[in-house]
Every structure is written in structure tokens, then in C-alpha cells.
Length: 313
Image (cartoon, rainbow, N blue to C red; front, side, top):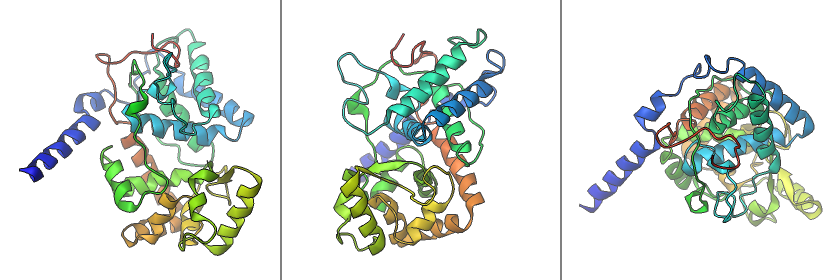
């Protein structure tokens, strides 16, 4: 009976993650009749944000994952609660540049009379993320649209992978989002952009983690003595490519949850394949991002289109 109860719980989780009704409302041309210039507007706005700051692209990508992984792709991550009980109540190291990228894109969309107050913040996050990836050299994939915005944000809703997670823990977390191990490894390739605070990996340096390349260990010790962060991919830190996987092959994964994808034989083959085949990585990343974008999508029945992404209407 206990095993049956556990199985039932898993089934319930999977059904809740991707509602067939909600997923059916998503389509690439959702706004074609009301905001035909939407993608061009967001593309131009994101380009300007990336010129202003190299942090914009990785910060926006991280924002999308955080949003979808917490309560679904519903822009709840953007809400500022008067009580402080929102998804940023604790320090999840989400960067201001990511939030500003979305706010600027929303302002640009709403400046078009055809589009004003007709496009959800959740869809703007999804589009801005695609632009951040493609304008950094990554795949220019199709984005499904039609999400509504959640009306509230709660810190207790946030459950994210830990930077020290092993493969089993990573797979368990991503399975709750309806994602496979291959999806997880492809999405992890997003760590080809951006940086991590030293506190997330300091426990590994100084010879404490034998899976870390000794020269990389020494490099990180010197880096963290001078500043509080290191690039996730120090070869091409602002370029979206497959060097992340090549780094893992050489023991140069920054986070423990990155390097474990190579040290664990069950996932090593996929890392090797992506390291040798950037096109396949790009294709699988696009598929995984599309699946992630369908997680717990809100509809008109349980959501809204926010006028200001920071506050419910």
C-alpha cells in the first residue's frame, strides 16, 4: 500500500506540472492578431539591454528557469510583495539586470498601442530568454505563447536544485517538472553563460574535490581571493556554445552539480556527445526549453495579464 501511495503521488505531480488544457492554449502565433510586432519589439529591447550589460543575458535565462521551476512559467518571480513573502524574500542571487531586461521589454511592448496591456509578463520572460540565448550565439528556437500571469508570489513556493546535488537528486527534481535526464543535461548547458558566487563552490576548492582539475582549483582559489564570483564557463563566458561540456570533460565544472554530470557514468555519454556536437546540443536545448515553458501554465481562469510585472492588477 505504501508503494502504491508513492506511485499515486508521482502521478498527481506529473498531471499538475503540465495540464493538457493549459498546454493546448500555447502556440507561437498566439498574439498575431493583437500584437503582430511583439517578437520584433522584444528582440530590439533585449538587444539594447545586452549592450548595456553583459550580465543581462545570463540573468534573464536564470530568471526564466527560476520562474518556471518555482510555481510554473507565470512571472510570479517578478512580483514584489508588500510583506516580503515573495520568491525573492531570500537571496537566490537573481541579478537585477535580469529583472530590468524584462521590465524594459514590457515597457517597449506596451508603448505600442496595438499591444498595450495585451501581452503577459510570463510570455515576455519567455521571449526575452530566447532572445538572450540566440543573441549570445545560441539557438533561435520557436517560443510558444499564451501564458497568463500568476496573481501572487510566495517564498515558500521556491524549490530549486542545490549546487552540490548528485545525479539522482537532479533527476528527481527535474522529473517533477516533467523533464528527462537528457532535458536536464541540455538545460544545464545554459551554464555556458554567466557566473556563480564563490560561496556556491568554495567547499570544492583547496584540494577538497578530487573531480576538480588541480590547475582549475588553483585558479579558483586565486579568483575568490580577489572577488566574490567566477565564470561558469571561463573560456567563452558571454557566448552560448558547447564549451560548458568540454570544461566538464577536463574537470573544470564550477559547481558540483555541473561536474557530477561527467563523473557519473550514467550521464557522461550525453556530456561527451554534446561536447562533440554543438548542433545537437542546441537542438536538445531548444526542445528542453519548450518543455520547461509548458510547466504549470496559468490560464484566464487562474491568471491575469499584469499591467506592471512587479504587482498584481
